[in-house]
Length: 294
Length: 274
Image (cartoon, rainbow over the protein chains, first blue to last red):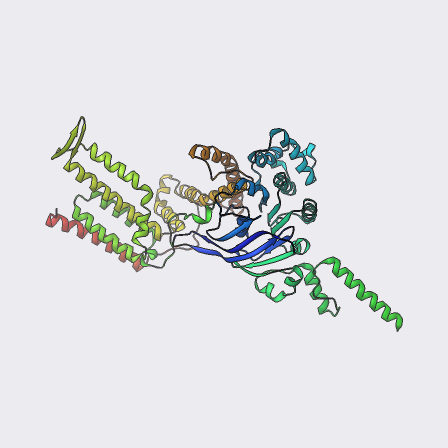
């Protein structure tokens, strides 16, 4: 694998520090995120996923442990936080909380203005960003935010962060609340952007099908501890363990299990639909040729 | 940058102590009785008696004296300011005057009376803190409603008023959570809300107010829908899920407190302590 772009070392996090209500939610996490990969963070609710995400763009600064982003310690007081937050773009779970200006253009311009982009570049950048998420800039430039549909809001939110030309993309449960078509579109555009812009992507998801479709590596976070971090094939083979954490399995994996139960001998390591199709095709071809021999 | 999970809303701390168990209606009445009593005290020995009583209650409620004392910190400057003003502008029988300049007179009596007032205020703070530490907001509002319910007979909208209060309290954490989300979203796109001097910060915060109000209105609309869809139509004929009945503990605590205060009162009167 290529070099690490984010390094997390022995990271702890507590709420209500210094009061009788103190509660530790992350218990000493250490891991690395490699340049250009797509890492999925998966875990039951209250496992600390969203908290962890907020360390990558220095919304949280570690009190105990270290987070190093692109060779810069986020604890370092000389660190240019603005530049870091431009580099590490974050898409929040609800686009409603991310969009706070009146019109689409105003909202996308918000980040650009904060980052001191020159006036004459801003309009072009907004149009480019809208084009990247395949929204027609003639139609959407002056549209009011509240007149957008859920999927469109999500796209505008992404345009808002892509306009800043980030290097790392952080997505907090990006497909939640999207309809099935919106979800497929969204995943495809993320894949496309990832490949085209060479981004590193870290995403939290409660939908295992997203994980299978998108992730290069998967981290299983349970109760603030990393239980597993590995490629998806090695994660989803441990079915009992995943279920015991209260997680679900991807539909394809469930289908594979059912097939095996009913006597069709497919490889239990298969996690995506294309592989399954191929192997079923193989099996039926062999069966047919056996029949011909008979 | 973490507001919601680092803020304590209300004072309530879960517990299983005697004081927690007393019926909130009795507690409210006793709180009022004690506050009235405190404001009637005119001697230092009375303060000492009540101080001892409060220590006993703190012990019984399993709360920590220092934890409550810490809560006094933010209001301390105001208390001290009031104290100073009272000493300076005390108008009463002039006792021994220590210092005089124009209309400012500092007398021994003035200092005494002002310190006295401050001690009383602190006692009242303590007793109300213990009350809110051991009483959940819900049971407090519920008890309030039941106490002022008889006023409904004279067309006083007691249920509605309490309901509005409950919703207002309920909205505080929601708004804080929403504010936190907005702030994070803006910070993530390069707004530095956490930097700059007070004026700069205030200007930046004002950019949060409009979206915050919009979302508050949306929340309120959702709430109205949720209430209507569950057939809410005011207080008339509503029954309670948990019907509280007074227990022996409630009567005992009531009688104990009233006895304690009457005895204190009589003792002080009788012996003419200070």
